Length: 489
Length: 95
Image (cartoon, rainbow over all chains, first blue to last red; front, top):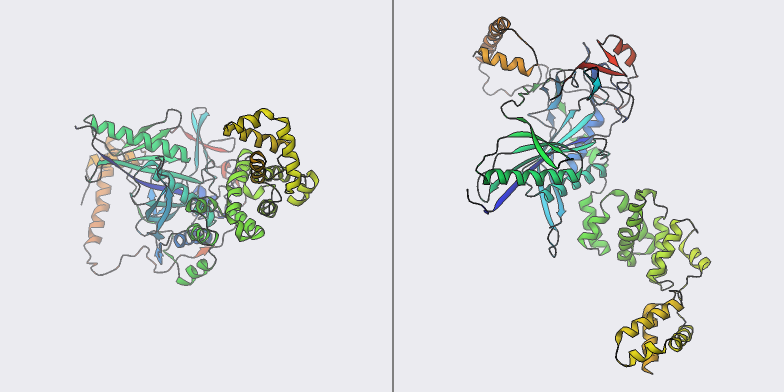
């Protein structure tokens, strides 16, 4: 086959988001993470004879919130179905899921995708959702050696999940990751999932295929259980390369389920279509259809927070921020709240400076110390204090960073107290600065001479010396002007 | 509608059940008997009738979210064939 033709990548994602309920989807057992094995597996979760599932109202409400956030249709009537397969961590021999009539249909999610090419700005991408449905999680199999047997922990069995399925809308690993990140931020934003990927609360399956531009859809392979954004990126990149090389070498792609091995960075086939499961879905006779009345949807709608997309636009409009800044500041509700509190205290005129501080020094320090913004030792009000003192020329931006560090370390109650205690107030008295400059000029005759001979570099050296003499407390611009005047005179 | 021996073998594999050739033949007959009943059901004219998900035409009752089950691991595991360290033990399965 001809090499070098244009390939198009087609990706669809299926995401399992664990819902933040305190009890399971069909039983009253706890969903808390990290309990001793099987202490949270009740008779219903164990599928003991005679038990019946009863649907958790909060799980349904999570699905409604999700549907509203994506502008999707909330089905007035949806049906639970049995998905049959045999595995020891699924005691009933079937998973209760939804098949023909899911609770959420359609909807879209729009996000910014970094182009990945230098000089090209990020672009907006809209991903369409096929559906989202409620289902129960399975238990966990432990394959360590128990005298040649497998250990089963059913604490997770029956944990409520929302499976979120997209159309094959994504065209690169970068788009898939941007979607997954936006979805991850959204489910946390609306409070339906804690998003903890290490604990498996948010995991993705990626359906990947390639085709020559304009050709019909290629055969897809499904990469299962990706529990980090990095693995998602690596697995898709590897899979794309493998599929293109296979076709270009004259081979063909067969539908299969594959696993990603983080150690090798490769995907390998788990099962092919020939021995694929036949799930024999049918409506679960133990559960009646789920009806969601318009009044319930309205009540949920009334309690929805402002969504990240709306907030992003408001930040651009009200605070004069760039799309990039607005996206960064609406990455989580906590970040957005911190920023808005900071602007409220510093004044709207400082909205851009506040944004720079939150995304710059604050976020760097939080990253370094591995802290969430809600636990930041510098409060929005304290940060606003720094911003205000920079705005009114009491301190320079550089000194502002020192004040920030001091506040972080708890050296004082607010910026003003620290500025006073450490004597950081900017010297604006031009007489005082002139006096210091005279001393600097007298001490550096060589630099003065070089400058007069036309060396601009020498001027910078003199500014440096002057700033040093003022211990950084002079306004650099003022020093500049005065120095030039002196040297000219 | 009927199924053949080969399909019975496939269903047994999916169900992780080992069956002998004699059992397979018997099972084949029994399953075809059931399929005959289904064929009879399917001969009823259902044109224009919306499918029902349940025999009762009522909606699901919902439960308030709350932990109502306490730990009964000890009594559940007392009747399990084999347990260790709080886990149920089953024959080794690796897919």
